[in-house]
Length: 83
Image (tube, rainbow, N blue to C red; front, top):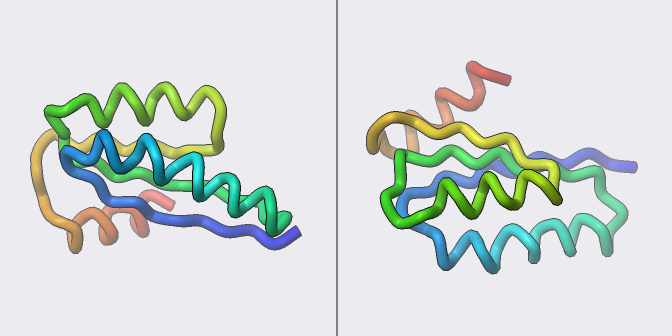
């Protein structure tokens, strides 16, 4: 089984992640992929954190919640360091 990891940067994306995360894991399942999502959030104020934490109960998700908005470039840099 092939392994796949997707980095998903977020900032106030609650409505989008509600749809996107289940779709991604559905694609993993259909294609028989061992998949994981790494969500890097810049301290969203719209409930994104709560939705991601709830999805962690069902899906393989690593959640990194940063204390402030730092931009996508720094998100990717940070994730690559932590992995």
